[in-house]
Length: 263
Ligand code: IPD
Ligand code: CA
Image (cartoon, rainbow, N blue to C red; front, side, top):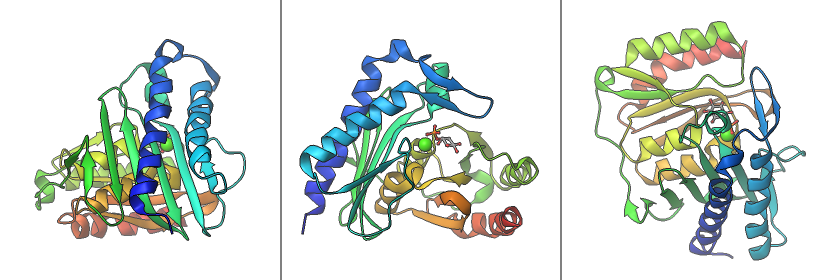
């Protein structure tokens, strides 16, 4: 059986190398294969996934690897599966925002054992294993102590899922619930901010496993809660990630709206 420390080292190296490749190619930020109204297919997404894959393959040639850029659907939750989001926040990256990251997680029989989220333009590496604390650049992470929703800062996302009516209802509900809502545009980095206590909560409907696998573990190991509130066709998820103290108040408001979105 592999130790979580061994797996963590490979996850961190894969995320770091992917991020460094993108950093070395910042001058190519407009080098996309396609730029659509709701999505951007970037050449560096594909390249960064290849870089991360090479790191994992060199260590574990027989493990399954799955990423946002993979052409096959997510493999069954059996054995070791690596999950890569090569650039989370591709649209931000394309426009020149620094808010993007590289995420690598490893699961065994569906349980996340280790994960790393690298935010290259902040120079921050977030990492965790299932049996230890979460760290940012070697410093232990802890969620915020905020327990009053009206004083909380909460991030959310309006992704590629264009169920506008319910998405706007959810945004309005969050706006009414917390002190300020924020739409920052990179789910994995946003969830790491909850782990670091820099924001108090995050919710998004329509993200995928690769957006949250590593960051969800990092948050849990920083004493927060990352919960799948709903599963939709094609692997889309509704995710609530909080400091724990705000979890139930957020859930109370969001669960009925998520149910509405499911219809
Ligand atoms: C996106 C980002 C964004 C979220 C979208 C995701 P990508 O991931 O995480 O914050 O709103 O739902 O698809 O496409 O940039 O990897
Ligand atoms: Ca993503």
